[in-house]
Image (cartoon, rainbow, N blue to C red; front, side):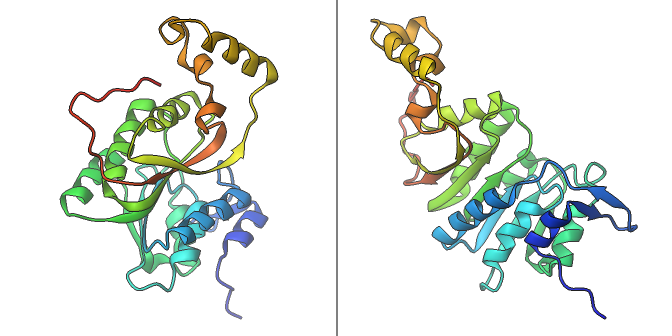
Length: 248
């Protein structure tokens, strides 16, 4: 009897993965099913054909993306994960093959800062990108720079783990970009009443932005990013002046 193809739901329900040698490993650090549905909604919203993901891991969010784009002419998932071996035992790629999506995947097992410039040089275009990798601000800032250029106008860029300090700092910075807007958020966290009161009081002080931390003067909820996952939509090309700056 032929084994049924792997699906997103069956993978998450099992709570474990299997490597190429048949060894079972616990499923961990994966995107939740609810967040996968959130991502799928965004992929459908932009009618994406070419998607890009940084951070393949065990392939959970990759399966979610492929489920939506599968069957489209020219469908492609550009997947970047320099740690697929040995950290993830190659399981992410195996799971995509087991689900029947291997032919959709263009895999790069090198750091994103090596891949993204080459994609831009070759005039590649994407409509959706999901970043769930390192949490280092400057690394993510480089990713964001290239991904925004690769995105079609109307395309969506999503960052996971925006409750981590480095990712949160990036999300705050991106809210100032005139060519981006917040498209959606997942798992929003309300700001405490005391924090709201403190922010309101501080904002009334003349020169507050020079005296206090920006996260106190402009809390995350006022910027629309008080969430674990934030999606940005590219609404135009980047036409900022050479000396543009906006603190966040």
